[in-house]
Length: 185
Image (cartoon, rainbow, N blue to C red; front, side, top):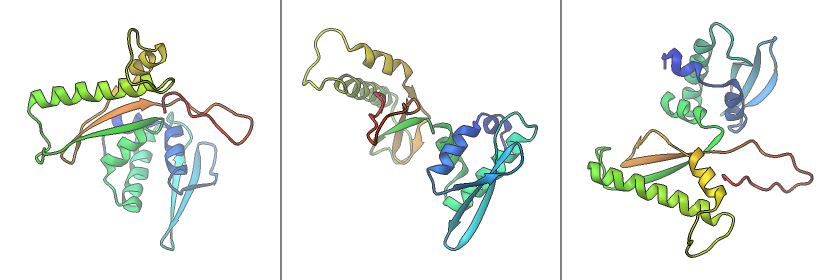
């Protein structure tokens, strides 16, 4: 991946969250502008120098190196990794349409898939605070607000996969071991 514009959109805090969720450990701060992350996999040690800010001149090149290393370590494509990095603060719902072996759909089927995915997300958002078999009248305000924040992501190959991006706010500090998941989750 060499597209500097795409690479410069990756936020350092999202990179930290991504690495922490995947068995990488922040070993130490390395200088003023970067952190050293380490992963040991199959008795092999991997290190990454992760920028603490995107305001350094060679930020896209550093991110390209990190993504290249992750590609080797995770045995995944750079596009998949960048897609995951872009959605670290979101839940991603994948709606798969079978029988689309070439990765395309008739236009009418695609429109129906999007409409059905919207209705599925709406039903889920309405039932989160109060599960009912049927909702009459006005939708709950929280459901409407949630749908305004939800996004349609890039489609993925593998039959035909529609991605719905559900932004999730950072967890609220809590007193005690139980944390209440945010409404968006």
